[in-house]
Amino acid sequence: MTDAAEAVAAAGAEAYPRIVATLIRVTGDWTLAEDCAQEALASALERWPRDGVPANPGGWLMTAARNRAVDVLRRATVERRKLRDLALLTDPEPTPPEGDVVDDRLRLIFTCCHPALALEARVALTLRTVAGVPTADIARAFLVTESTMTRRITRAKTRIATAGIPYRVPTGSALVERLPGVLAVLYLLFTRGYDADGEPAFADEAIRLARLLHELMPEQPEVAGLLALFLLHDSRRTARRGPDGDLLTLDEQDRSRWDRQAIAEGLALVERAGPGPYALQARIAACHATAPTAADTDWRAIAGWYDELARIRPTPVIRLNRAVAHGYAYGPAAGLALIAEARAGGALDGYPPALAAEAEFTARRGDRVAAGALFRAAAEAVRSEPERRALLRRAAELAG
Image (cartoon, rainbow, N blue to C red; front, top):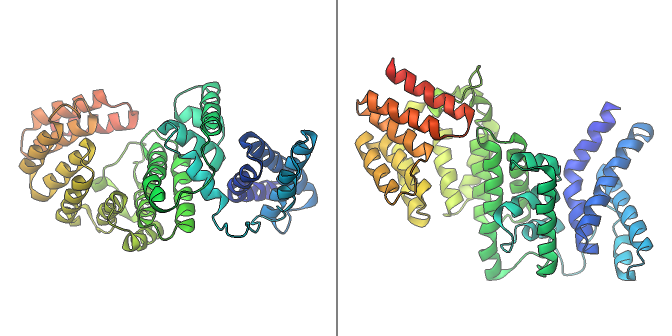
């Protein structure tokens, strides 16, 4: 029973997005596609423990979902073309129509991430439709009720239908324009999972979708850069907390617990990445990942990469991170000066990482009292309990 359930879970993780994407392409009905995919999984949970796991689990699920869709459409007396197209779906990787070699999952990702939708709606729709994450889990991550999230996802699907958003992958200049928006959704999804109070499963889904995107678009260097960035950050996941559950900074972490396989894969991808913002962030992460100890970190190289990143994407947060890198590379005075520049105009007022960075370099300049006050101010401003405890711990160290 357990083995069969595990087989359903494994096959579903692989086949669900392909089934949904293919049924949406054929029927044009998002709800029907999701319902049929879910019913195929439910049927597998009922039948596989009794009949045994089929030799081709993904193909079994595709056939079950297709048959269910055929039944529904026949009762609805829809046009014959949809029924004919559904009849062709006899395996998990149906042969695409002549001249059409784009994977249905890629179409689905680009449709869910269309710029006509609000960013959070894109993330939620991608989680629900592409990744198959339950609506209740998505709602919990967004701090809303399940019914509220259901309405948001429904509105997003309605928007796709009423706005006539095409179910296709753009080409040429349109692809260049749209791809950054898709990558931004995956980046936000990863961040939602990697944050101190985030849902780790979301980070896993972001990595899985980035792998899929890289598999389907290997010629896009920024896709490689994004996947590399995810892997290099995620390699530290198990080392980010101490025995008491508190967050640990990079210099406090046990580097022997870092995932060396993920690091090796990330470094190989960095070599193929381009000069874009995600690739630059991946190169920064690679500097940390390859340093044997915190003291061996090549902060001057990191500062140089941040100079380039701030040139092409001068957001307040990136400018703050650049200031931190310069502070470690060239001394606390340099860091504090650049922090002041990044905070000019008030964009970072009350931003906990800015307060914490100023506190750290203030401490390194020798003013422990002022630094402690800044760490406490950062702790008051932060929403994450693990981060709050880490900041207060640092303040207590300076007071001791």
